[in-house]
Image (cartoon, rainbow, N blue to C red; front, top):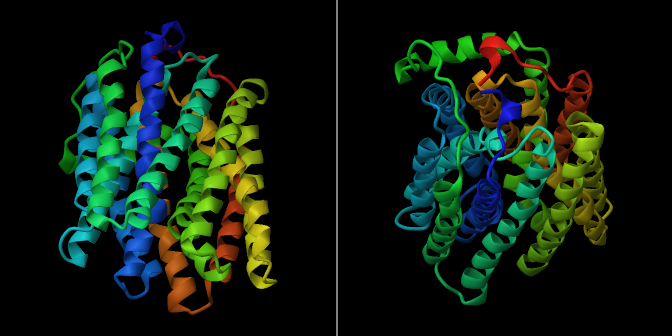
Length: 417
């Protein structure tokens, strides 16, 4: 069945959007804030580097796991069962954070990252099931916009329980895990997947993951723009994932913000990310996803330059400009880049190519946090130098992205899903 013949029920679209909210509860409540404050409070030595190592190890697993699972969902024609298993892994890992010795928390943090990031690839591949080509940008933007409400919920749980009521980290993380689970349930109950033709042959075995990954990249190279876009995504995702993991430390340590002010700053950024994603979704329909994505990346780059200026010139109040500026650009990026991927990928290989899309993102979680830890801690150059390195990577990404053709494709024959 061709992509453009499918009209999804409204309940599917709503449930898909709500899952984005569930994802973001974990993303901000755990990755963006909770795990960093936990590591600082218990006195982990060199927290930037240790958190970076855990995220890099988890990213390496996801890099090989996501394309394999994506190809299996292509073969079986069902993505939701796989998404459910991965979501439960992330929820269980989150609920166990802060329990037992330090090594155990880092272990379950890594497992939660594997479930969350691999599940995100399967979730993104459901976009054509819950939208039409004409509404894809709008639905993606709505998912990101509503998703950012989840960041408020995640941070609200964390600060309400841990700082407001002085509860334990373990109870706080368990509450975040429960919220993640509750908001993911509508997706499993209400999303209706479009009919798909099963490809010939058999799905790849786990033992064939490496050879299959090579074959998947060869298939991707046959479709114009796919590999170039994935290279650009590697570079800018490297920047974004690294910032997410270390932005709180930058704000508190380099700009001198306390926990309360840093939370308000993040909330301000979230407040602009929501309209940023919604506006981006609308602009995609008029100007195309690649152009809107490039503009969003440029806005984030400007915000990062301002962050360095604020730290070096001792102008902490400049952060109140950086937050809204960076938030608007940040919100627009996921709203647009998954639309680019859906537009340039053949329906028959959509799950597989979204697996490569996730692989690129996970390899970036290996390199970016590792480089940040090395620059900031090992070489002792500081966080401003690490931020400057990220700006350079972002500018290279923009240069690569400019040559990606994101015009609508007409799929025929075996490329149809």
